[in-house]
Image 1 (tube, rainbow, N blue to C red):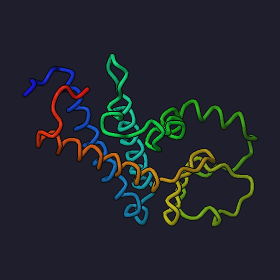
Image 2 (image 1 turned 90 degrees about the vertical axis):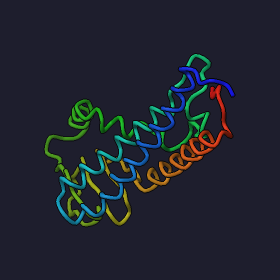
Image 3 (image 1 turned 30 degrees about the vertical axis):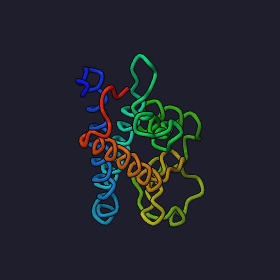
Length: 181
């Protein structure tokens, strides 16, 4: 049996953290529609939490060491996975910059829809920018008129969790031994 190195411990702990973040993403996602019936702050807080955990998963999967192999490579998550789609999450994370962009882009008298829940068709305004909107029926979150399907991202997060689970189980059973990378 080969002893673990610091690099092996880093790989193992990274994969375990991916599992943790996917679990947290699952918890946040499971609260979105439950909270949709309660208070707007609760649903948008859950959406933000879900997206933040997914961003963390992406960061952990993209981590690499000197040989350029990523943690995602080790557990079989391609860099084309939806979990890596950062443009939408980056926009949310950098709201300060996005705010200036859309204020410059739209006329000053545009109607602003924030923290709305329900179908977009229920909004009876043609001159509106949807800054934050969620439709529980379609699972679409809209941020500054850009749509993102939260359910598709959730499905991808579950796949990543499954890959991390399998790797850890195989490692604990001795089917995968160091060196891990």
